Length: 337
Ligand SMILES: Cc1cc2nc3c(=O)[nH]c(=O)nc-3n(C[C@H](O)[C@H](O)[C@H](O)COP(=O)(O)O)c2cc1C
Image 1 (cartoon, rainbow, N blue to C red):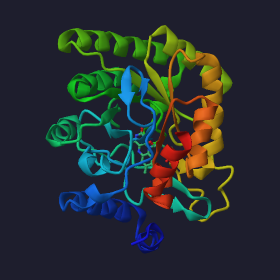
Image 2: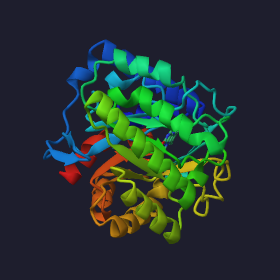
Image 3: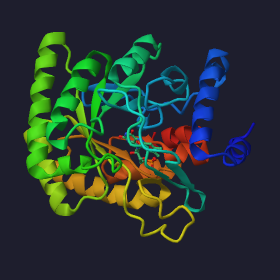
């Protein structure tokens, strides 16, 4: 069945219901061996980023497989890497439904999930049971009821628990759906947090004899001044990578659409230019010293190539997959080369 047909059926249902159904169908198809027949993406040159070899530069962004329960199936779609999470120390239900909204007129999405997840122990168990052998990023966050002054404890606890299973750890301080989380991007708080995470990484590296890079995931709603301070802090604390960007709280281009005023973070096409500007500004400041993983609004192969031109070494996607289907992964691999 074509993606357009499946999409027009799924779009008749509530967005979260369709999302869950799609993932279940994907895992079932994998168990039935159906995903083994999928066409492989255009061969890419191998690239090493953050010390990790990537077969291709196109990854799955965090949030689609929050509990790491569909890694094997997602791993068959042709991604060069998969990021699971955001995972928090304790399980939590997230915000009340509805909390996922489509903006089909502009191929956008608004979500206010609020880190619904099964908690780090159960997610690690899923990862342990998976057969996926590709590059795995594990995205970590804090529980909604951990006071912001104690956020570092949550990140460190998750880091300890996921370290041996991750190829890289993504530190999410940029979701708009956990109260005050984005305050961690402020200079003083960020310096303290990154210093603590670096210390823990050094300890874990000594213990396991394996270095697992840390990538910081940032918001698209930052000013140039913020970016100055964040870039300095990343370099000073020897953080290994930056993921730019998370979803935006800006609604300028969509406020007249039917779901355009929903609270939460917006992703998809309306985010594309915003996140590209952040990547460009970051690239100027980091000068190639710290690699950028570009994410936000990719909906064609050309969009993926534009992220690389803006300064990213790898890209990720989420919303575009909902509107375009798997073809987007193949197109992005082809366009980046
Ligand atoms: C429904 C939904 C849930 C998301 N959940 C997370 C999350 O748990 N952690 C995270 O770091 N980013 C999360 N994101 C943000 C994406 O990883 C990505 O940064 C953002 O959507 C921009 O990319 P896109 O325009 O290709 O979707 C989520 C995005 C969506 C649409």
